[in-house]
Length: 396
Image (cartoon, rainbow, N blue to C red; front, side, top):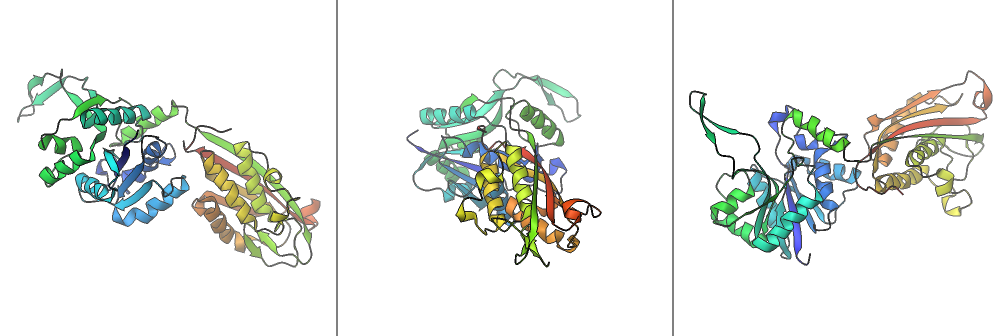
């Protein structure tokens, strides 16, 4: 499309009908926050040039971190403070758009299953008619209730449609609607446009384009996702071992541990981080740490292994996965590692872009048996669970 298209995603509400202790848009849907899923659809859509997400003012930083974890980074995406009402959030988003934006879509933050086809139909209808709304024909019989709670009549459903989003319009038309009726309480943008006398074209939505409003909607949405072919879970295992060496620092999980000896290796010989890297690469089916960081390459000589881990994590997110959790076992007779495990978890959590609570580290001995029991070195096993986040469908 030659014109510039923006989408505003109002997500500043709480969603009280979900009975949660946090705003519903941050709740996990099949392991991924609802708002991430919604924004991702538009970030991957070639029709969309700009994305504005309006969230509660006190959650802007949290949202930025959350989006970053899932590969949604600043560029065409902007996060702003939303308003008290939905229309206030949309107006705030409208005010941030550059003058080059011609078409504006508005899409519910809690409607994560919208398809590229619906977005395209809305854009095409706006180009043709000026304003459009995704909707589906009402299929259930509708009853009108009397004041006594009894049926007062049956409503003809022939011409009735159930509104969805996106709702879209030429920017000039939406701005005119706000000037004329912006103070009126409305439930959607189509209502504002209608009040301003602007015709809105109905375009075909989808029964699967549901809005997450009640707990049962989560169950339905997860069933839809499970049938969509979205990347699921993968398991990876990594193992590494290094012998002790004099005049070396002992670095484990990115933390320097006081000891008489360090570990021999091309980099800093961080056996824990190497095992974790191998587990992540194994889960991706992407070889091992030696393939990506060969000891024949001098650029990795003496390198802090957390830097290598960060590169592996970038590969992980680029392939459409995030770390769900990691379970790591260090095997050594000495030194005693318990006092340093929490620090290791914090360092690894930052590098993996996850909460440190998702990384478990254990230290054990072999009761004097084997090379670790003889204090010749340290071994480490790591097992990870990777979760697909639908960033990309190509895992080649």
